[in-house]
Amino acid sequence: MSFSNPEDFKALSRSSASSSRASTAWMYRGHGDSFYLDSCGDLAAYHDREASVVVLEYSSHGRAVATQARYENQYISVITIRDRAITHWRDYLNPLTVLAALAADPPAATINGPA
Image (cartoon, rainbow, N blue to C red; front, side):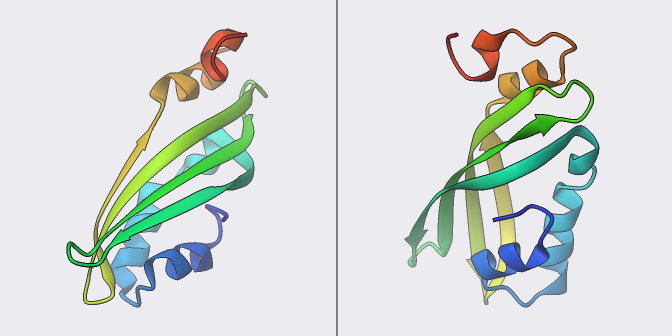
């Protein structure tokens, strides 16, 4: 999965609504100014058909643009789908990992757990 490839999000959401794609693009705007990702993976997906909710677990691997510090994070996305369109998307991640990678001299223990 690539944050720069809209087709990846289309495949995940199976959505044909342009507002859903636009919302996803807006959510990740400017991401490339702070981080470049080498890969995203470790995808696990859970789907509750009754509630029309999809939960994604995944990870990213890359570097902070400004500091060149290694950046790895894990994510949880909770997505609500109605009529084949994304109607709500919430992301959860470790913000300390983001801050550590963006710091000029990030402590190793905060980037990927204990050193």
